[in-house]
Image 1: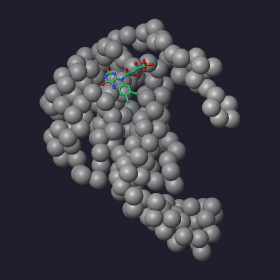
Image 2: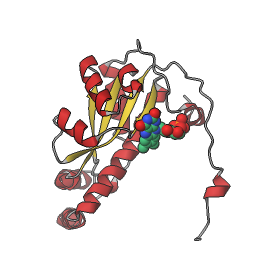
Image 3: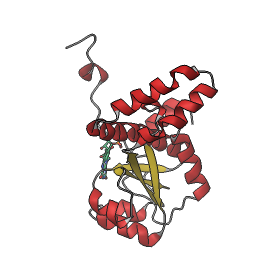
Image 4: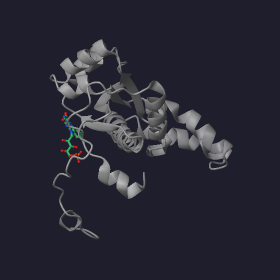
Length: 204
Ligand SMILES: Cc1cc2nc3c(=O)[nH]c(=O)nc-3n(C[C@H](O)[C@H](O)[C@H](O)COP(=O)(O)O)c2cc1C
């Protein structure tokens, strides 16, 4: 789909086709696209828990205040933010060096810089949420491009989701994205503030 058409077409699905399906290959290629999102130091704070089993979807629905979309969507993806993303700093610095972006002698500095910044727990949490949110948006656009609808969702109990799906404690549920064939692909565009109303130049 042409880009402008794609961003115009994406909307939060109200009604998924309860008989709709999405294959694991399709899910994987959509997630692959999401991995191209930017992240601070390229730490790629995102992880994805895909729930496509019927019973597991019902479990997730119950933790999502019984939102019907979780059951009707072909799958639900719990987007997780990694609080310990800085532990991958070495791997990322090695790649930068290999590709000639980071001279070998500065590698240690960059790793120390990352570890210093990420010793702050609120930084860990902010970046986990910021990074995985950018991946979530990329994922929703990639899904639409392949003909699937999505709905981002924060209406769920994160502690229950964490516990019911045995999510390791370094990963926090950031949002659920329900995904699948939709019944209302031509939903009208909702109200938006105009750019002029929400933009200032060079300060307030
Ligand atoms: C972080 C976030 C959380 C949301 N949570 C829910 C939710 O729990 N349930 C739901 O039906 N929609 C949810 N939405 C969808 C919003 O209502 C929707 O994005 C907004 O009304 C704008 O509509 P549009 O996405 O169709 O442009 C959420 C959206 C975002 C970005």
